[in-house]
Image: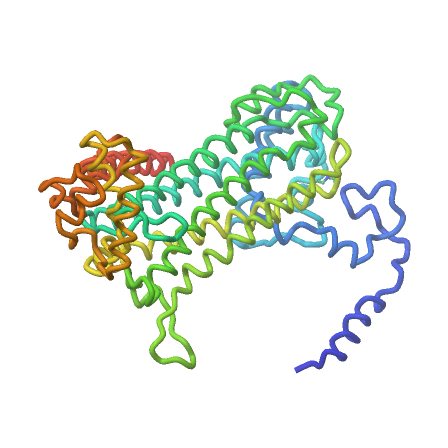
Amino acid sequence: MPTRKAKRKRVRQTATARPPTPASNGAAKPWGGRFDAQTHELVEDYTSSVAEDGRLLPFDIMASVAHARMLGRQGIIMEPEAQRIVAGLHSVWEEFESGKRSLRPDLEDVHMNVEVRLAEKIGAVAGKLHTARSRNDQVATDFRLYVMDAAEETVSRLLELQSALLTLAETHRAVIIPGYTHLQRAQPVLLAHHLLAYVQMFRRDQGRIGLAAVEAANEMPLGSGALAGVPYPVDRASVADELGFLGISENSIDAVSDRDFVVDFIMGCALAMVHVSRLAEEIVLWSSGEFAFIRLPDAFATGSSIMPQKKNPDVAELARGRTGRVIGALTNILITLKGLPLAYNRDLQEDKRALFDAQDTLDETLEVLAAMLPRIEVDAARARKAATANYALATDYADYLVRKGVPFRSAHEAVGKLVREAEERGVADLRRLSLDDLRRFAPEFDEDARAIDLMSSLRSRDAPGGTAPRRVAAALRQERRRVEAQLGAVNRRYEE
Ligand code: ARG
């Protein structure tokens, strides 16, 4: 093992081992014309985005193909030249895609890699591809295509998670749990109703990522050049059309510097993770000895290296923990953008690292949770007992009085006193009090007050959106239908 000191020495050596680079072929870089000296290796490492932006490769090729075709159509380059470029791009794609060749970090980024390899294959004509284009509008175009594609993948994972929540809810559709406010037992609800609350959250996330972020990304920057527009008769609309963009950007300066779509996407990821985290927190709580409403499947829990009896909810804990990372990515992109003058600045290269990390973290988390949820076991008896404890039916006694004509505030007051009396007498459940006891607090209590129980409580909350079993059953059916239809649509698009 290298000691800390040795490590530090090694680092220093690397930093100084290379001589200040002598003047030589700066021209090896596609932009090397005005440079005398080669880029220092440290600078090459520091500025290279090849480690990350390889993911843009298919979109870079796609956009270049569409651009080259348009250049040919418009007579900006000759048709045969355009054809050679397009054929060359296809073979560059095949080489990289099959793994025969990998991206060279010394070539700065994925765009340079494609261009340099294209030139190696088809010669000087490759240099015509970059006519009427800059890396600034190119990378913005590639990244928008990437984000629209990524959104589709994430949406399908959000749908899978909703499907898993629905499966868990459907399997345990009769289970009653205490609903909480302030983490105090409040009113009984169906477990399915509680789980459907998460389905709503993830449905909204689907909209933020699959609609809002995609809408923000759905404008093509290509044709904006470095920042000022391009001095060629380009046909931007036809390129946008070929690439599947809804339209073209309206202002060249905005087009090369706008990363709002990145913010929207990461924002969607961050909020989805916040929802995941709330669910994870409940899984942690509910699987604890204190609650013990659920048992985690062995395959999704871990043991302790010292305490043999333990079964830990690590997946939920890590999902909760990784939420911080995605919120961090959102902060990262917002801070990157806040100080930037128009138009392109190299800082913008950092947008990809933030987005990829947010996307990966969310996607992996959604996948593992979707696998785990349907396998969770539920202790219905334990949950039911908790649902009746702590006078959780008190509101139902007040609502009973209201139905007998008592104003709600007075009913609330009377039942409050009733609860205090029960507590003082050590009676844990209002149903164990006699009718005479009840009447001492409100004369409106009658024989039918005996019918107040968990089921009557649930059934009475029958207004739309409530926990009444028939409402919940209808909500389960409706959400199941929606999720299946949307998953079907996503899968059909994949197959296209
Ligand atoms: N790798 C760069 C990025 O991701 C591409 C654009 C570079 N443009 C430039 N003018 N250096 O932002």
